[in-house]
Amino acid sequence: MKKKQFKTESKKILDMMINSVYTNKDIFLRELVSNASDAIDKLYYKSLTDRKVKLDKDDFAIRIDLNKEDRTITISDNGIGMTEEELDENLGIIAKSGSSLFKEMNEKNKDINIIGQFGVGFYSAFMVAKEIKVLSKAYGSDDAYEWISNGTDGYEVNKATKKDVGTEITLYLKDNTDNDSYDEFLEQRRTEGIIKKYSDYVKYPIIMKKEVKDDDKKESKVEDETINSMIPIWKRNESEVTEEEYNSFYSDKFYDFEAPAKTIHSSVEGQVSYDALMFIPSHAPYDYYTKEYEKGLQLYSNGVLIMDKCADLLPDYFSFVKGLVDSEDISLNISREMLQQDRQLKIIAKSLEKKIKTTLEDLLKEDREAYEKFFEAFGMQLKYGIYSSYGMNNETLKDLLLFYSSKDKKRVTLKEYVDNMKEGQDKIYYASGDSLDKIDLLPNVERFKDKDYEVLYLCDYIDEFTIQALMEYEGKKFVNVASETTDIEEPEEKEMLEKHNKEAKDMFEVMKESLPGVKNVKFTNKLKNHPVCLSTEGNISLEMEKILNSMPTGENVKAEIVLEINEKHPIAKKLEELYKEDKDKLTQYTKILYNQARLIEGLPIDNPTELTNLICDLMSER
Image (cartoon, rainbow, N blue to C red; front, side, top):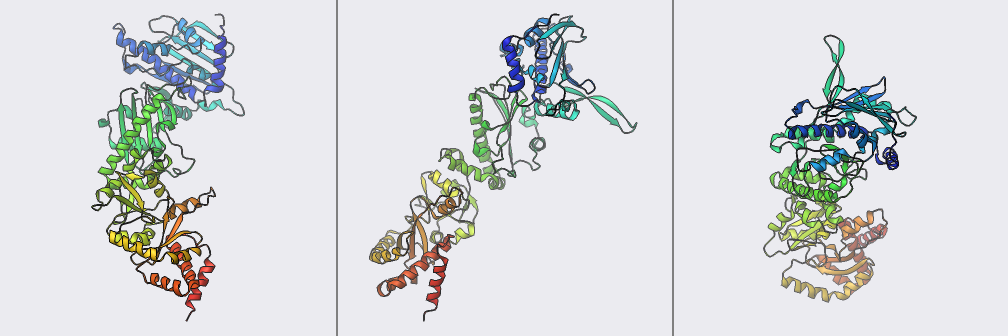
């Protein structure tokens, strides 16, 4: 038969397909297997709608044969096959999709899922093949035809001989080059790996010949072996899958040998229908808090892997979730590697977000120990989700947070804190520091504990930023116990303190002159035994100052520091005496007290030499 030429536009598309559309050569096998599955679907559908057609679904199969000697790969199916006209139409005109038309005709029948929608995936085979032969015999026809092409000089369709109905595609591999070895696709293990990755859940058996050793006879024989799983675990009813099966799937798929903290298996029908199987790990991967970590769920379309990590399906604060989503409603581009639009993805992602949230809430209620282990690994990410969004994600995440409490130094939720608040208490108190023990010893914490107020201990560097982004919880504002305005005193105590500070106003001015970095000096009654403490005015706390200044951005952030002196401590009376009798010595005492307060807060001392000299001078006095 006379050779036919591809249309001009088809030539351009073919060149683009081979050189641009597909990002890796493995895809060709996925596309050809998907086309074979489509062909079987069409014949199976015919058996459902035409009483004259008697077929057993169990007889359907896809075969892959590797011939190292001839350097060929053959993919065959016993599907509906193609007539001469269909070979010419479907393979001669690129992007002419029989599958797409078939889907439009039968979109009401939910039992038929057509994977190939574009009629161009077939041409991805030219990435690895220098010539392709397609031998096909259509169901109900006595004749078979062969389509042959090298991808550049057009194609021809000739009458041929084929015993059984179906299609057989033979790829003649390109010659190896310095950069590309096409022989790799002739290796059994390599080809099986591609099938397992992309087409493991195609619902028909994918069969390959495999050499099996017989130890008794000390010889080998070749047997057929089905290499795909066919029925995805996520397509089964949740009640039919055991915990061991879930854990085994998780371990095999995501290379984690520790069982997940929680498994989420859901099937959703609606505006966008999908099946999802997700896992909340019980520990963080070694690279989780690094730039190298990639978030995302595997994305399948009708059981065929489209993307290994679809980042758009997970918000950053749930990036620890592993799993997959399978949907026939997502819109794909011609390479089936990228999405044409993200409307469907956004709908799925929003649904998944709600499901993950409720699952974590259930874990928190039902298994506190398991949740705390989870939070130890991923709590930082939840906090960052609030801080990085400037509080936009508060409603989603606030009830998942845990903070250490001054009571027993155990973690509590914000709801638990509010439920246990003292009568009349209208604020949530917190303190920040490097560790639980250091926070517990802070002078500002002492009085709150003494009056039986619960204080949240913020030990992680991000905690206070998270609290500020939250602003409040159930109408209760967060207040730092080290804030200069924090107040738990009775009205009479406050009135007496204000009077004392007014009387000492001139003394404080003298003291402040010797402390250039201090905004104010005053007496306080919120300390029990400690002589002195530091507090701050404004939004920047001392702990935030430490954290911000330790970052590589080179910022020089300064908190507005207030030096507070315990009015009931003997040092207060001593300072008042020095103000009247020896202002130079008052300055010395002031500097020592200020630096002591900085040491208590874990802050650096600007001039340690001056401090040691001052202490030695006072110690040597008679």
